[in-house]
View (tube, rainbow, N blue to C red):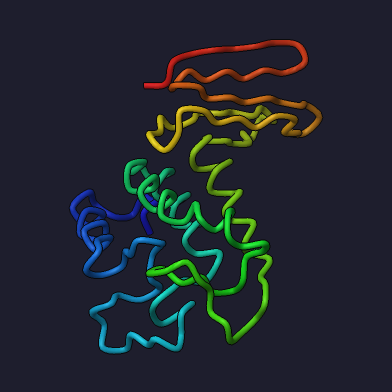
Length: 182
């Protein structure tokens, strides 16, 4: 709902107020259902409790970036960065309050690519415009001092993108652009 532009700022804030440690957030991620909900189910990590479906947290991160809440997006992204370090693939459900995944259920899930999606379209602000142009509008981040993607092919163009201490550099075969992030 956040990036549909149908909610007032007050309604958005009421939704965002639920992204807290008491309800949905834990050290290692976000819960699929509020910890306060009567239906919270410890045996249903992806849809009913202590974890989340592998595609949902990254999609939430992208939604938060694209709806103008980069600090909230970065907070959740920071909580799930361990996925790339400890999981050889993304299982269907990933636990939020410890480094673990749901052991019963599907072994892996294609929606795990949404983590990449949240980086490309959320953090980097990659957009494919109707006129065929490609637009990159990255968010300033406090998660790291250096971020690089080299050899990203967008349509027929190969692009190198680096963010070093909030200076962005976008380099293609024919041009290089650098600017400071706001």
